[in-house]
Length: 222
Image (cartoon, rainbow, N blue to C red; front, side, top):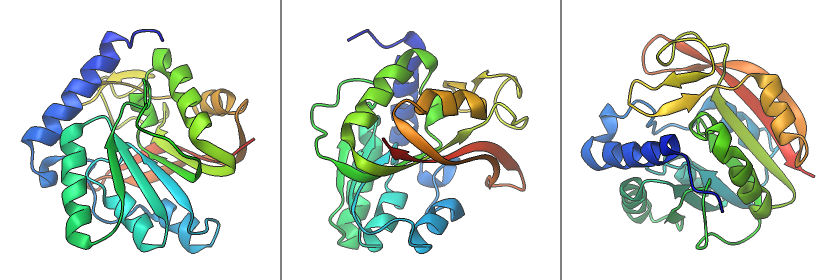
């Protein structure tokens, strides 16, 4: 396996620092309520209650939502502190969600199984181009035949996020380097392994009145 890039290692370190030191209310992307686009998929019965993998689960809110809807959920995050918080939430709720600290762009020896639904919400822009082939190989290995895969991430069309607020390579206000892809670029990346069922650039709400532009891809494993 190739060594991760310096930027990727820095992202992991920064994410751990954020989850270890900040209360959830000060972490911009932490939400208790699941996003509307996810609810639409679940509640329109496009997804049945099956095995689900929540990539970049953070403190576990969306994993717990899926568990309440009857899914058998595994949540993974690069931050061990985020995973500890997620485990505490699961214990308090009484929901049997499995949480695991793992880097989906690296080795994932503790993560096994075949999942019917994969959720990757606002994570792909943190998977920089040098790490993307390994990331996709890991996802492909964990996706069962015909598994659904929802990927939502910052679009290169967005002009409100990052420094500078345009282009593909940017610096997140929270520190890590991010790569905001174009929609066609992501479609080309996923297409060899996943059938693209739906793709578009969507607006997603931030914590203020801002709406971010994001790539939405709903896919099925070939």
